[in-house]
Image 1 (cartoon, rainbow, N blue to C red):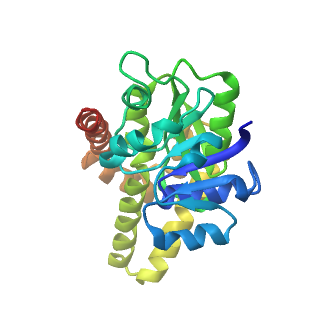
Image 2 (tube, rainbow, N blue to C red):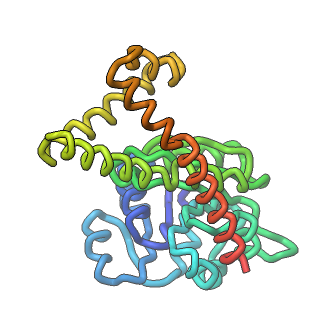
Image 3 (cartoon, one colour):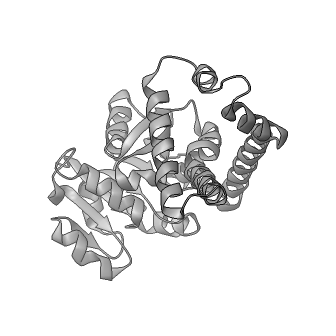
Length: 277
């Protein structure tokens, strides 16, 4: 009988490493995690943590309750073709691969006429590497409530999860939280550069910028007030914050953010078409 707590990671990159670290000893024992990683140099590190490894999909997959696909999208079709022979009817497939639609992957795992239905597609983000990620999830119709809970528990090991209505909604997730860390880093870069221009050292500016972002985010998360109210409380009429926000407005800050997110969502749809061939 298949061990319900056995998990296979197909792909051994940074996101797989973050998830495996979050799961080991919490959701399942390390010995129940099997990692398929083409990079043999990484196997010693996995094995040192008590996990088993292979360089290519193998028969151990048949004993794993959950498969987590974490490979590059351009490699996904070939990897699926080599793994599907060990797919079981009760396997739960979780994909964290960008650019591959759930129905595309379902067809590769099964067939165009009989796609595999127990599949959850996820869009995590890089803060998962430090246990502070946020992941959007969408499930196909064949996923039970128990499987949804199991999929959520996997991603909750590295942060928060948000369920969306369907796979198409993950384009919006990609545009906001998937790509979002880069927006934050860009804003932080600008804050640090601006801090230097107004007389701070780079180290001082970075510490102030990071602390301000962390504190403001914590305040927003813990407050029941709308974001606009929190912003207004910092903004005194005729004061320094009002002057700064006016400059943001004149530069079209909100519109720039909206345009950037629209571009990301559009590119997400384009990639899905490219990789879905």
